Image 1 (tube, rainbow, N blue to C red):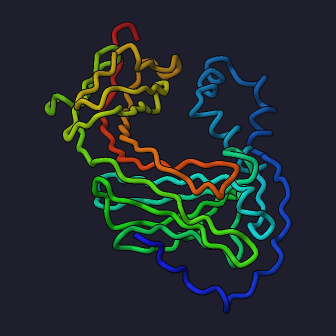
Image 2 (image 1 turned 120 degrees about the vertical axis):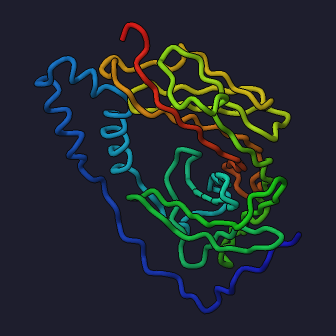
Length: 288
């Protein structure tokens, strides 16, 4: 399979100079900090929940303070490429690409007029479109297929002053369907083991992640043999939410590692993922 030629850029002029960006003041984090001493202890414990404070304060602070750089100012060799292909069981695969300077946690790169990203399969050649949140730049596309061994190429096409990076490849792992082992049960008391099953088991491992408003985040890895039992002790309620019900989502991921074009001398990562979720109601356990 060869690379489909990118649309000609000969008629596209280089865009105007990128507007300067500065740091924004995170007012919400400032308010939180100024009120810490005034909070009663139970409320502050609740606020210390990673989902309820760090997401608000830390997440929005990093978003506000993020910087970016225009691709016209960076050689391909100075970029780190982070590519992901995710299928969630609806017959499509969602492509997300990030380019950064300074490694996987470095400065986001915003593509200039002569730079483009394409997702390519044997049947499709789709340009990734720009999305941004603040100065965090991502490029996305949807492919109309999620079959096992679907080979996906991501090509970074650049103007004549820079090197292209078109040899990034990954193959999709096999799709699967997952559900609770006991289809007649839709709730579990905390402390009870939870069993999940899936079809089309494969060699390798399955990654899992537990999330819910009233419980602490948990994650791990298990053999991809069609069965996962989460020990009841791994689903821990936040002290401030003891006695409460909440929905729990277990995310399963079957992953395959791809390869990134070596022109990205800073490195990169390309993962192909089949992702499924199973949800149930988490109810208070004994002693809550």
